[in-house]
Length: 277
Image (cartoon, rainbow, N blue to C red; front, side, top):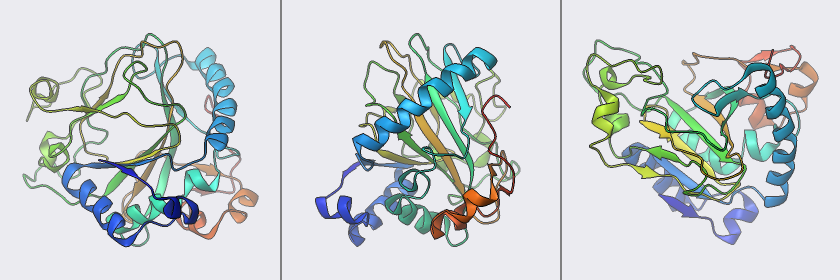
């Protein structure tokens, strides 16, 4: 579901209470929500202009790592990537707080970029099961937030998602299949080919929030330019596996109060880590 913000919501960065409830319901029931054009074009252009040479240097040093002409790259916790509208936008955090409860935090600050020539990924889940012995669905405990730096179209490799249920499957069917492995409980790649999916089209500066367990895959980029999503992962207070963020003490001290809360569990007092380090 794509929500168009009202002028008042865009200006105040506060959702109408009913819109907030609808967004929370959609993530719970359907697995995701999109807020259209939340961040200004000027700000997104500035971030993209800083991102592109950093990504080019990363590829020269490390190459692609998530498929043909496709890479995940961690971001340094520095300007302009840590703009308040990126790391703790009030519209996004209002939804996240409702879903994950008090004390939630962010422990993943990265990007995903299919370059021209990128091919399909396998359908996959971004997380392994918390309790593989259980055959019951669990409430949402981790959310992925994506912010595209360009308009996402059919041509430039949109994310394809399997909404409306894959995040509700028992934990035994959650599995990362990018390495061509087969889940012993369910052949996710085969099953996905026979299920309803949607491609996520959105404008640059939109915000996508999705349950981390939702099945998804990257699609081919047939355009002549990269299609980058910034990516953050927010977790309930008790969960935080997978990665960490290095934040200089002086940078942390200057963050807005909400950002200090969200990044309080990270490696504060360490220099920002460059993507190739």
